[in-house]
Length: 164
Ligand code: PNS
Image (tube, rainbow, N blue to C red; front, side, top):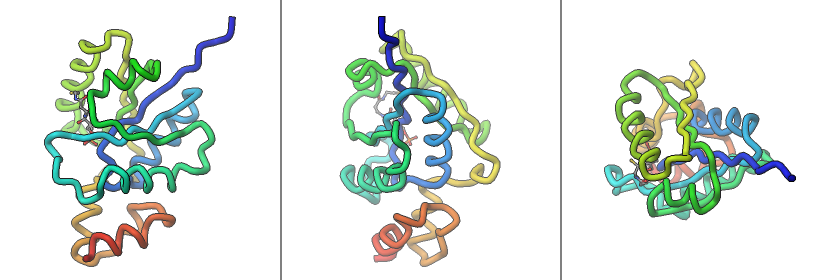
């Protein structure tokens, strides 16, 4: 009998995708057969700087060299999408203890909605502990250098878009 593919989802707002996100995605891609970077709607961040289509496009550009990684968009429940594609695991990056309470609550909610779905937390690489999409947006809006924070292939587009 053929082995069932192990599919993981890296969900998030990705507004925009950062080097910290990519680091988690790369590491997840070494652990699973397939990784889906899922651009989603976070109801508490409804006013995104980039549209869903833009966030998907930026994520596709930075993950293009990872053969088992795809990018998708979904505006519904994460647990529903995971069941639909047969994903076994959600991967979340944890930067600090402050991330934990919210992530823990989401993990338990997702488990309640889809009992076969596990959430795995990966610790962010030390060099990206401070990094967040909101920090990238703020630095870019004030004309600061964000080259340390986002991948070179999307740097100019993000800078141009946010400095307007
Ligand atoms: O990058 P973010 O904003 O921390 O990601 C949060 C996200 C988008 C993964 C979360 O808001 C989410 O899962 N949204 C989809 C709606 C959903 O399934 N909510 C129930 C889980 S608590």
